[in-house]
Image 1: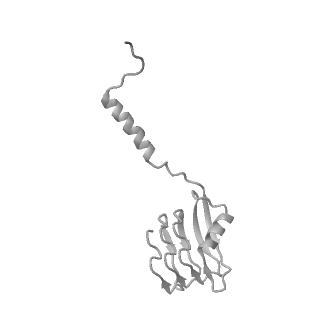
Image 2: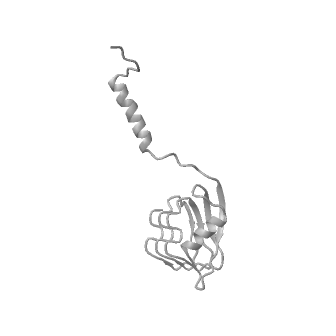
Image 3: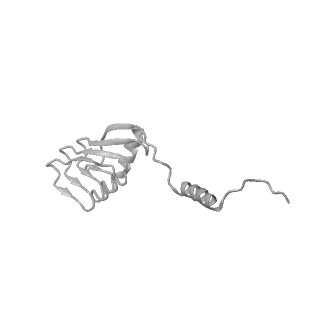
Length: 135
């Protein structure tokens, strides 16, 4: 009986299958978006606390996608950075606080692993638990 097809040595077949399996399991390379530059965050909270919801809304309003990098500055309305405000914002590269910020709350910048520049003025008197965990 005549067979048709391709003959592949066992070692070559194993290498080929391993390559496909590895390519299937590995995450796709990260796509870098554009640098959106400095975004000035503000709050409408009566006590001056910038919340996670406000951060997400303001990133959206500035057309920041999950691939874009950006820096954060703060309007004088911001007195506190709220719990989890920038949680896991992996493309946040730089933070400059205004002199009105006095408190950086729990996990405010936790998981911001691209954060490489940070300026904390003397006005900040309290930095709470895990504020910069995983940075």
